[in-house]
Length: 147
Length: 148
Image (cartoon, rainbow over all chains, first blue to last red; front, top):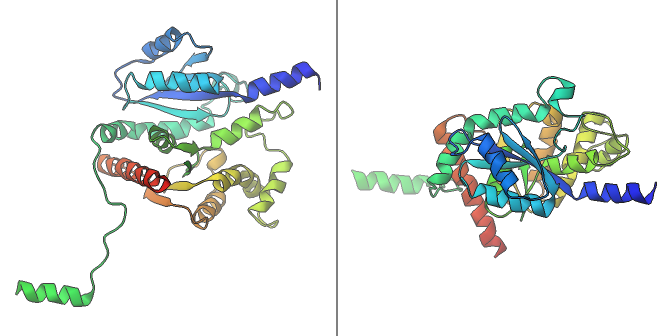
């Protein structure tokens, strides 16, 4: 393999792709989201999608963009990793026809995103451990005390 | 902390983990390694003959190659994990996670690994979703405490 090809592989390896998904109650639209991403002037590939946007670039740059974009509406902007780069012909809907596989999962979880944002806005304390059952002896004592 | 999730491609779980400053171990990360490799160019998952062999670490030779191939991708994520969140009854039947036996094997491997595990049910209503989010946040906070 040529040294030029080798350097291309290393370049690709450090690149990551993230999907930015807007919740149903988000304050910004897809167009605004993409415009804001462009305004950051970061070396990223930005693709507008029906759920929000897909961004691809060096890991550090992508993370920086994600942190800044989340600040716009912290409880309504969700992000997820994506294996394939944006517009990859092996996965892109335009070439293959039909929704790509990951879309079905996204579509199903999108139905719950509104409730997730509500929960993030109003956090509540919950018990992770189930309360232990009381012993019969203890139960008898309680009954006797009630009589 | 590195938290493995199940379903391994869940948006909700991965996002909540990242919000709390932990690292979600998601399947997309493993897939990225495969699709960026220049020698492999066959859709949809880029499984090669190497994967069922690597999967032997997690499943016996009698197990179908599909399960072993999938385990070659899920397995390293489980090995790397410091904690886990399992969302049972999730409607994932699509793509690479659409194999019931692999899913059972993954959950078994996670449970036997002796790491903190949170098991929740896939929510279907507003109340259940809010409870799920609060439980996950509580669990992730407890991990921070354990970690110091």
